[in-house]
Image (cartoon, rainbow, N blue to C red; front, side, top):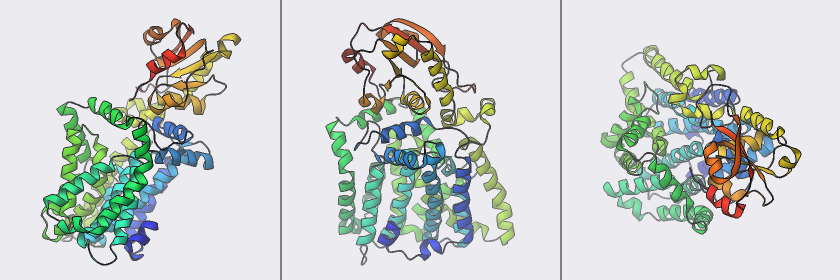
Length: 505
């Protein structure tokens, strides 16, 4: 409502969308909410909940918005996957409405607007809005920002446009408190505006108002990053090293092309061509060019495919213009008889891969874990906690009273914090968890969870394997087959050991 009021669009901009658009926009969140509890928490969701319970202006790996929202959701609604996935599901519906609205602004009629809604509703959007993730809100923020820019690029200096620029500044500022990737959006758009010599945009006072507002909102996180040595830069560099090869970078671009679905990828491709070449799209040329510049940035920085996913809704909206025209030669029934089966088949493939439709115990018999590893990251956490409880129960009273658990990563840490019962204090050296505390100096027994015996023995002595982690679903998770190791000889003080355990990933 705030953005709508600031942009001064009439209620008809969304309320006047065709019934078909509203049906799609309503169906998607209903489906997502119905499936929200089919699997368990994703490892990142658990991390966000616990990070939000350690409120700060920033974290090693992200700004604070998603953690704070996640913690607030569980505080209000209880600690469950459904609680943290309500807001992403609602975002899913709103994004479809915005996509259809963009299609209408580009000139699409009722059919084109419904086509845009249907393509986005059956795309990567399903998986993205199923999980409580920074990428979910980041992609939605890009979509909102581009929605506003579509209006501004048509008439950046007209009267009362300062309200739209203010709305853009608010959206970008809030987006930067969720993820730093909007910097890439701004860089791509700035380069594209210069390429197309849209000097009236650069001369607009509203642009500088938007920049000032977004920087003011982002400032607390920037200050936090500066005070901590900009750990997100080190984090980004570490992640980029894992995809440093040309093949890995090209794979990410191919994955980006398939985000609209295995059968409907031509729609955003056609949208890109329309933005860059169609006479009626002249005002919006910089958006198409900004996408291409973002691809270059993504390739050069070894970025993941979702780093530029915020452009997909606007490309789908643009592609719906030409798709509607091509379908105009058929009767209304003929249009949907041709498009409907293709869209349904594409959406079904996306849903089977990205949504928890396959029973957990059958998941390992499919190719879904290979295609979409995020599915694996939603299973096996309570089972792991039960195994750790069993190891703790085998300790003597004296061992247990002076023991601590060291989790190999924040996923294990989250599982033990959220699902563990009557456990010793849990710590981890990964990312921001390292800052949340270390074992007390009187700790003499350490339980390493999801570590190898050799690694534990390199730090402490008298180590032995007490159990091997089994998620119970025969799924290739990061922790599957790793060990639970107990060490009981603390020859080195924690002031020396704890810095050795610090790592980012």
